[in-house]
Image 1 (cartoon, helix red, strand yellow):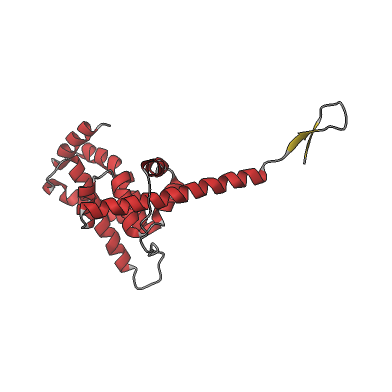
Image 2 (cartoon, one colour; image 1 turned 45 degrees about the horizontal axis):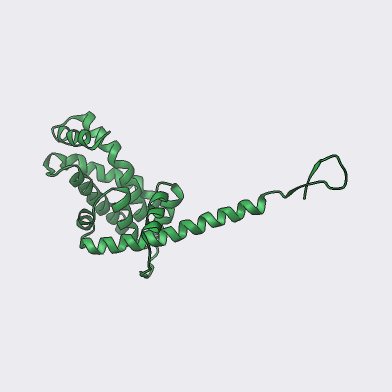
Length: 209
């Protein structure tokens, strides 16, 4: 479905059209699940369910276009995710590790490499291991599809800070994806049988060493 159709669906959903609301849900929910997963891990479904209760309740009062709607739903989801973490704070959890931000040089090709890999489940798991500010910035920019200003509104940060966090996250993600691909190639090489021709006779039979 194209953006114009979704824009019309947004207006119809605000007027109470249930099918249009379902269309919006199908567009936004996969993005919100990935975003929430970077914050709360396996509890992302519960968090987004809570978010959608608020989205459905407040949708008639929403003012903005489709991009604004996506940013608005991401803001609600983030608030519900942080509430969820606060509720769990009295017991040990598996929140994202806190890592020191490291500025690393990167070029456009590396950044595009990372973006290309983000669609895979492995990449999404790697994103969840980034420092939270980087994970959120990458997901809002690349998965939810927000520009830096809208993502900054969600996170309560300046657009420049979001760009920096996304840049560093993509650079770190690209390195981890490259390492994962190298490990997979090494594993494949280790398990590949070595085949050579049997040179002891003229039969041409092959043996496996």
